Amino acid sequence: MSELQMGLIGAGGAVVLGIFAFNKWQERRQRKLAEPPVPTEPQASGTAARGGEARIEPVLGAATPRPVAARPAPTAGPRRVPPPLPAEVDERADCVVRVESIEPVQGSRLLQAAAQHLQGIAKPVRWFGFSDHDNRWETLDGAPGHGYHWICAALQLVDRRGPVSEGDLSAFCGGLQRMCDIFMGIPSLPVKAEALDRATELDRLCAGVDIQIGVNVVARELPIPGTKLRGLAEAAGLELGTDGCFHARDDLGLSQFVLSNLEPVRFVAEEMRGLSTQGVTLTLDVPRVADGVKVFDRMMTVAQQLAEALNGAVVDDNRTPFGDKAAGLIRAQIEQFQVQMGEQGIAPGSTLARRLFA
Image 1 (tube, one colour):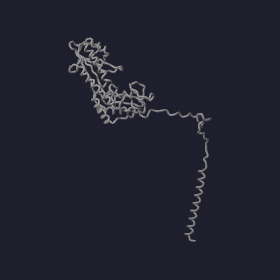
Image 2 (spheres, rainbow, N blue to C red):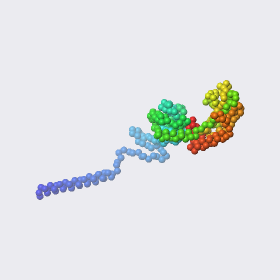
Image 3 (cartoon, rainbow, N blue to C red):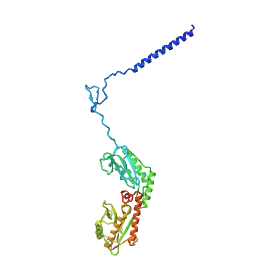
Image 4 (cartoon, one colour):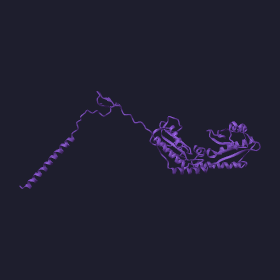
């Protein structure tokens, strides 16, 4: 045979031997994988004993095994889902911001920070903290010892001075963000343009029903003595307030109408004895009272009683006698405006109405 043939035979034999060796290696490997592993150390059972006994684990270096305490159930952490808004706020009338804090924020510290970072804002800002213990919102009053994971700030958008300004809204949002940076809070800041639009629209609605009714009791001849005036007012159920006016109040202590001096002098209890005046004015703030017609009738009754007792006359601002015809027109106006308020979702005399018309 030639050298070429001898070389081919040798190469073929080498290939056959290689295939045979590879097959043997594969068989041995498969058998090894199929055999169960032999444990090198004793293993404790992982099944808990009936009746809730503690599981026994081997402890390195101990003469006898000792029980391992069962893992306690996880406790509830701070609420992560935002709680509903406080009942005292209204998203129509307030710019509401909820703040989630990683660590509980002390109410007293929060109010101190608000006094610094929200200084100069013209509209009222109210603060609430959500009590995880009582599961309810609490009005923040600065009392120490209360910590909250959820805070609510409510900026009033409208009052009798008009809608909130863009500057005040920016100051509110910017101040809140700085406070959140201090307390590691996450605020849900509003879209400013939307809040300003809401404020403008609400102010327009309020302006359309904002009416005050006033009548005067003026002296016909001699000035009205302060002592007699005070006695008559108190006999009619009115009480002198710190604002220098006599107030007629309802069962809840809310003012229904006021009696003030027609002259630019406030009534002060200690000075009533030496005071005299040419007349008084009785004023009904229509949006701030419920059942305005009934309150108006009570006010007119007091006005007539004062006029008769003081030898005075009931007149309007033009000194025109205020008779039954004028009173009937006023009653119709009061009823019309209060119906309009109800249609807009602002109940006359409600807490919301008293805030908006303050």
